[in-house]
Amino acid sequence: MKFKEKDSREDDLQINLTPLIDIVFLLLIFFMVSTTFTRESQLRIQLPEAEADESQVEKVEQLMIEISALGVYAVKGPGDEEIRQVINSSAEALKRVLDKSSDVDKRDELVVIIRADRKTPHEAVIRALSVARQSGLTRITFATEVEPDGG
Image (cartoon, rainbow, N blue to C red):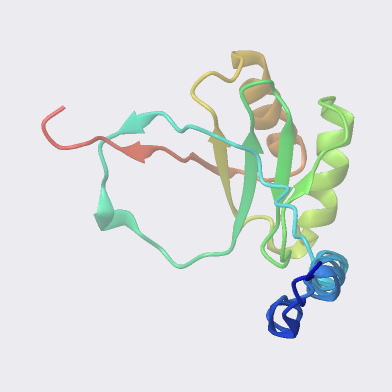
């Protein structure tokens, strides 16, 4: 009986993928661990629309108070690099953050911009106005979006 001889060339043509898969998984783990994830602490706000008056644009120091639709506050002072979210929505907590974010000597020159979501409760906006006034901040304005043309 004659047996077929096994062709040695068939064995040479196969590529072992196991080490390649191991290296790909190691690279994946390395990139996942070494990547830094930045979490934006800025609140998602949809501003109400209004007509723009570009003639009154000034270069002044600004203190931004953002209020989400749920009434959550976040404050960014003129020297702050990132926005600070207020821990709770009480007037006392907001006043502490405003006092830390604003310089006592420059409060008369500082412009407070309130960015309230269009669905923010009226109470949250009034609380922000009241606390800003109590902190000695008198130049207060509201941020809005420009109305789209033709609408």
